[in-house]
Amino acid sequence: DSCVSTWSTDENKSVAVSLVELAKFVGESSQAYSEESTEDKPDKVAMRRELESQLKPIQEYATSVIFDPKIEDGLYLVGAGVRKKSVVKVYAVALYSSASVLTAASSPAALRTAARSFDASTPLTSFVLEMTYSASAEKIGGAIADSVKPRYRGSASDISVLESLIIEGVNKKGGQATKGTTFRFDCSEEGVTVTVDGSVQGAANFTGLGSAFVDVFLDENAVSPTLVSSCMDSWSNPQAQTTAASLLEMDELDDDESTDEQMSDEEVNEGPSLEEVESQLQPIQEYATGIMFTPTLDNGLYLVGAGVRKKSVIKVYAVAMYSTPNVLASAASSTTLRDAARIFNSASSMTSFVLEMVYSAGAEKIAGAIAESVKPRYGGAAADIGRLESLIVEGVNAIGGQATKGTTFRFDCSVEGVAVSVNGAEQGMAAFNSLGSAFVDVFMDGNTVSPTLVDSCVSTWSSDDAKLMATTLVGLNEKIRHSGNDEKIIDTSEDEVVIDSNTAANATATEVDEPNEATTIPSKEYDHGDEKHEMPRLKTLRPKQKHNLLKKVVKFAFPVF
Image (cartoon, rainbow, N blue to C red; front, top):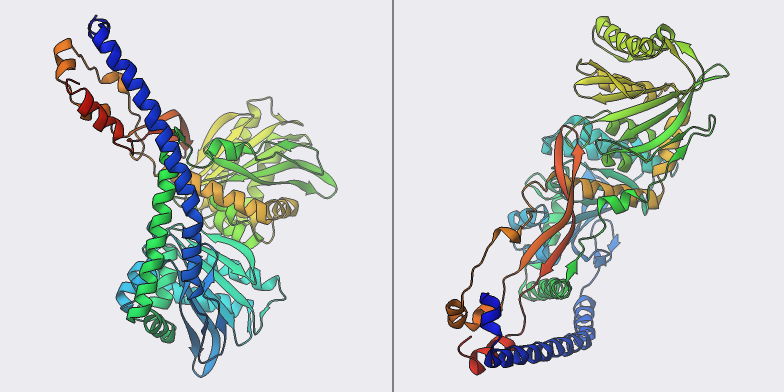
């Protein structure tokens, strides 16, 4: 009644028509403004190009190695130094980071803080090493790992993953990091990504590892004091600081422009959703048996690879390994794969094996065979293995005592132990510390019972496209794990507003503008381990009006409103 009585008079109908016309005018003005902004963009590009043309390469003094002034991802050369062992020059090293880090290079402490912050202005800090002295894969990998260890508070096995990535990269080029071999270490909040001679090896994704790696070169016990000195010398003078400030300003302008473009859309899609990425994953058909394994399992587990278990010439079962995105990202080699699959930390809490029988076996026979494979790999009591064996026997007995062709087993390995399911029915858990890691070793160590499984895992996830997919899944799953309170669903139906004709008459023009409203639609619950997380699908944004023309005209022409 209030709505109709307020706006059905001739006078107010006239006001409403005027508001419609004004809204059209503002929309056209906004479009014109957007076109003007587009025309201005080439000037900004030119300005950035002009600024970056002033940047110079740096020739490291002791080794004469020259480093480019910029690498991709908007990373600028901060300084260069040398790593020595006694009188031997092992490698030249350069630090690359954001414009924000350049402006902080007025003191070693400020430089280190900025380079390891990994905030919005500095998501990445990279180190490029060029060898000036030959070293074996194990020697260079071990030396870098030993430098990181005292600076890292996490598990020693995390450092082993980093070391293995370096070793595997060098082994691919003959096992020797000869003079001229280059390494790149991209440090971020997620961890450290390793590249050898331009080939990405994978990522050691462990929280705090990126900051620890930065500390190797920038803390008070830096392995290359000349690098720190070079950073100070290059960027602490007034002219360099002016250039750094200009680059930072350009970055901020780009960020603002990007935000404006996003705000101009009715809907903002924050990159691909987990569902969209998962839809690109493919099943794997195990070659020897023809058995097909689906690309995903519950609890955020993804298909890593599939193989066959043979006894002599008999194919006993097909086996698939499922694990977290962090394991996918570590599947560049058999060593890093095994290390990541058996760690059981917050980022990779479970690794599962799904077995499908292709040869019939009695309950005691199949259970005994699996138990015998675990025993030499497990340091605990024999009774613990007996518990695992009995769970398998009970499960097979529940389906008639025979694991016939098509019978499936699932073994969920975690820090707690190994949970057993037979044909989808949970049998229980052999809950003993380190039993889960021992079970992983049955399929992943140097004496694996299924070499084809290991080969399948590495070949599936070692290509550049697969690595990109794995890295994307890591990021999306991290966002889900930490999204608990970040995203709220705003239910506007809860906000009732009652307006009578008097209220309408006294309303001010400022009420025409509404604040930003963010809603998440739709969302679904996603299981990750023992926790359930809400996974946002699409965020819509209703931006504030950039132009106040409508507000001003309404206020002037129709003060009653």
